[in-house]
Length: 409
Image 1 (cartoon, one colour):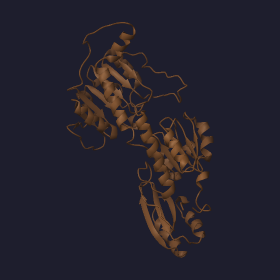
Image 2 (cartoon, rainbow, N blue to C red; image 1 turned 90 degrees about the vertical axis):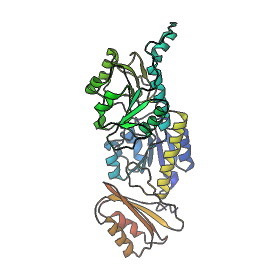
Image 3 (tube, rainbow, N blue to C red; image 1 turned 30 degrees about the horizontal axis):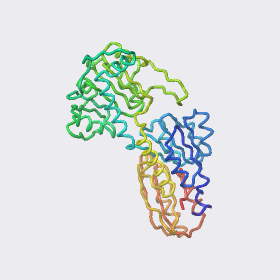
Image 4 (cartoon, rainbow, N blue to C red; image 1 turned 60 degrees about the vertical axis):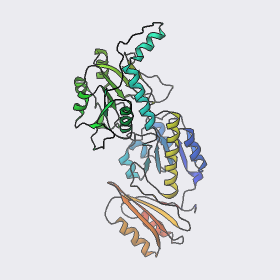
């Protein structure tokens, strides 16, 4: 690696927040980066200061990377979201800054599905109440408010990676599965797609929510939706805290409209394990509250801790952007006896023409060139002969619309 052109690995600073799995720290450290880990998220003021010298940042769901914070990230190349969701990141601004974002869309799917199935069984058998009685020394053996899940209708709201896998497992244990998704999604097994959310709610005994935290999903389940639910509905939310109106949920649990609820995510969550959790749902009957642990199994965290760092390292070393959330997808091998540079620019006409015109002026031989665009940016990777005039780099940086130019090797 030509250190005058490529940034030396030992000067690449990495910040990992929110108890990202140790395997991630180890993988990035073995690559030669300087890795700092912090067990909690940071507030805006702390993060603005920390991010100034960071090239790679790894976060989970609690850390907010907004425009104000990212504006101070002068060296930032990559954001690793060690989770599924990326709503905590201003993705539009990352494109403008030329910062690539990777997440882990598949790594904890099984863990979430398993806990949802478990919660459905606990709630429909009224185990919460029976457990509480037993701990008080009360032995009440009966079948009151206790049912099988077989032949019950499970309505899945959001049929992505988690929703679709939940569908197949639920059907395999005897449930009837219906689903609703704004996007066209292929049914798995005998699952039936419903055209509207209201139709799905009216037809379901159990509702399980698996959507993202976008603003348009705020209060997706609110007063109107609770009003049309069947009496005795079970509600599961393992998606995002803003999706269910908590006040309406409490009201419907107390009235008996909701037979049971399992909630893993909340509108406001503690930033660390040292802070106290408060919620209107504390102490309600047949209500299971968990601290945002749907994907928190050793297997899932290890999978995430392996997947995301490898994507980051591949991007730093080769420019590969496959599976990124915000960049066009390019996958390339690392070449020997060549130089590679990446050019990130606004998606405007003639940038590629200008790049090649400059290379032609300096009689630079192109060994390979790759371009992909999305709605905001163009991403060009160019491989050239090892010997070339260094003024080429300055000229390429000066092209109108350039966001970032980086020489990889």
